[in-house]
Amino acid sequence: MSIIDGVIAATAILFAMATAVFPRHVARAMPVVLPLLVVGCLVQFLLENFYWQMVPSYLAIVAATLLVFSRSQRSATILRELAITEPPPAERTKHQIPAFIAPVAVGLLAVLAIVPWSVPPVPTLPEPSGRYRVGAEIFRWVDQQRPETATDSTADRRNVIVQAWYPTEFTSARQWVYIDGLDRLPNRVTQIPGFLMSNYGRIDTHAYADVPISAERARWPVVLFSPGYGAPRAFYTGLVSDLASRGFVVLAIDHPYEVAVTELADGSVATPIEDFPDNDADGERYMTGQLEVRRGDLRFVVDQLDRPEAMGVLAGRLDTDHIAAIGHSFGGASAVAAAADDPRIKAAVNIDGTLYGDLPNHALPQPFLLLESDHAETGHSMNYLDRNRDLIQHLRAGGFRYEIAEANHFGFTDVPLFLAAPVRFAVAQFTGGERGPVDTQRAANDILAAFLQGPLGGTPGDVPAAAAQHADIRGGPVS
Image (cartoon, rainbow, N blue to C red; front, side, top):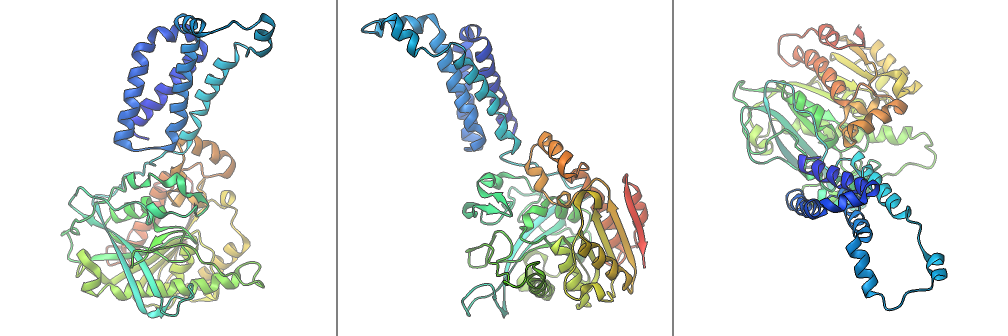
């Protein structure tokens, strides 16, 4: 919510509530207050565009104005003068609405006008905490060697969509739109009604378009990031932009036809196409198959890094000898899968993800980090716990495991920020996650940055010390 949104909405609500309680007093201020409200609404509309959240405030203003007008002496005189005949007393009594109904209705409308602001029209993302500004660029590639198995056309080839977040010293007047297909969103985006995102094009991503990568280093280490199942890469903007500000080039990947919405290379928008087998009640076979699709996507991204024609502003500036794969939820399993058979990947991070297929028994040759939300709050399944335990037991290069107390599964994403702070607090009392997304992501990135430094060519970081900077983080080295 911008300042002007908040001022107009709050003034409209206070105006309506005051009218419901003190209609005659408000009537005296009406010649001043009403024009100011009308002008304010027009300015808000011109500057901020239409927000559905404002509709109850508009209705509250109209209802309050009608109530004041109906109670004023002048309006009563006009109504008597316009009346042709006076209805009989008995009929007046029969049809007369109790006097308290109108102010109660206005007051109720004023209270209801507060409710839509539980979902801000334009969420506010935290600013990156690293020492670099952040640039961004989007690549929409087509892998001509792989057919698209999700569609019926044999001519379709696999699209892989990547948004690069990278360190820069520069700023510009343009940012990329927060989420793909903003003007063509489906009814639901990972269970979130699409209409709630109608103004997400105004979100400040704290990343600039059309800016060069920082000249501080000749080549920058690369981090592949794979989102949770069905989640757009956009939902991790807070996490990945902060990580980029710390000195990494983060390539956030959309996996078409699984992700809720993404724009393909030809400009069309792809939405999910799922084919769960009838005899696959727990989805194990489907998810294992989808993991192979994602593994191919990540491998293809790594293949592009040395192709100048593919990498745009990043061409020649990536340290392809130092690449890590990380991901959240199903993306965590995808990162492990990519690292398991690609020696170009030097480290792997699983953030709260259940493993599938033969991954639990794989002897991962790279350093590994398992970063978890609070077990008690997320309610991790036995599959999650057992399979990650098995993977850790087979590690060949060791690693770390940390559990962030009072963080839930969604705290690594932007999604909690789609709700107003008081609503987030109330929801957390039932679902957990009182740590909040900002603190959860900062703690995660402190640990991530320390872990990635060594495998990606820098001075090895002190991972336990990074974890110790934050309260209630349990865990440590594993082997």
